[in-house]
Image 1 (tube, rainbow, N blue to C red):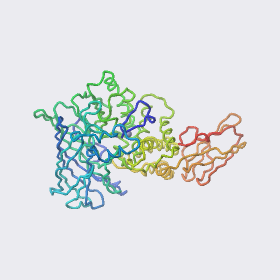
Image 2 (cartoon, protein in one colour):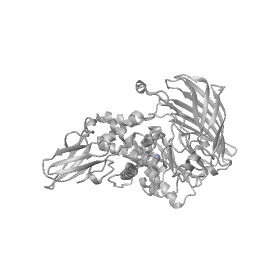
Image 3 (cartoon, protein in one colour):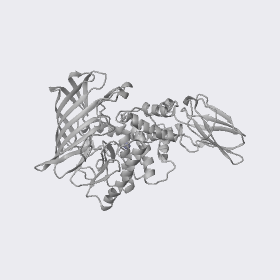
Image 4 (cartoon, rainbow, N blue to C red):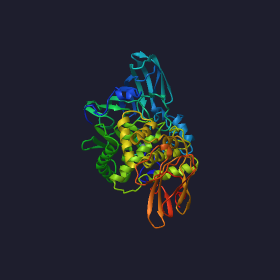
Length: 602
Ligand SMILES: [Zn+2]
């Protein structure tokens, strides 16, 4: 997801931040949880959606039937279930509206616009009937959540069928989804259907839709969409068969295996281009024929770059497992969805590649590694920022020494401002949108980049690949990335997760004194770190040293001179070199997010 601080990505990036047959995906086991994960106690719920949607492109209203087969893989008896009704956020007085009008730095795309929507401009999903295994059940719409009292509790291992009829209206485009966005795209259909909330070992996650972030159940989608026959439709899934045309409408049939979301966009003026990734998916590009000649040219030039991005992420994280990916003009910035992204299209070439790199990277960090974004927003935005900045550097030959430099700068500025909140904060409950942005995007990116400093770059690369192998198609937690790094390295790293992601402790190491050949360092900040150090001697030669952090119980691979451990509680650390010292530099590569660099050199 989703939105970006210009300072993070440079001027050219504004993000919002989030057709073939055969549904078999080799790497994607559909329902059963592999035995290896059962042993570890991990389980996850499963859904199979079947929906038939009838869209009226003149009134922007649609009717839907939804059959949902829900498998309770949890060890618990469920007495209630919850659905998200996200479109209800786009109504005057909704939590999204009020939060936007009361936060000190509202998202300019929202502002007070929701409060001014007229009845025929609001969004809504009205549930007309709901049955559990054929029996009508009680349900109540509470804002953006449908609360459902079950007729009969769902037992562990049981599979039940919910049948729903609903009416809905597409809101005027405010945030992410809607009709007639500012670039004139008719329908940006995201978070548009009644979506079952996720239940996991932490319980229900029926979060109201206030600002951002999504979390839902893995499963399979079968969607039939009836729409004006002149509309071109792109999005999640694989188109089945030829459209069935009746009168002025056509019915399109999509299947999407092993996803946790389904999004689409439609417009009568879409150009549809495709490009094949060698040994990979087909890429689809949907953009308006009404774009300027230069903008259309940018969309053409984007296509081979998207191939390169797909190859970069597949190589550095894990192979893209679906058969198609669609880059679609729509939405209000950039936001990631299943097998697709909606991005605004009136962009320079650099901006178009930048936003595509970011949103495509989310396919791995959010979509396939489906962390609960509301609770661990830094694991999707931050990790995405980390990998997409590296990918951009690579495919555009930017030659940056530090692709994450801006992320470090933003995080350190916030850490010193006194406004920082811990990364454990719920995505909706930061004091300011800008604080959310800096922490989720920048500090989250620094988390990974700096982990490379702690464990070594090669170990970080291995960690990312193993994290994908072990947790794709699941809901990984913060502990999973750090345990993966521990398994790769044999080091103890819990302190890194605790201090950097669960507190606002900061890093500040300094050079306290140098006397002839004796150096004394000081730990000023509370956060522990191992130390890379370069000493320049009076004879002009240099020597790199590495001071292991004792609680790590080991060290990263290094060519530096290994000296004794530093146990965290000791505020100072003294050692002697073999020759007289000219100067000393802590962390010469600046990979540590030390909040005061002035005292790192003497
Ligand atoms: Zn994002």
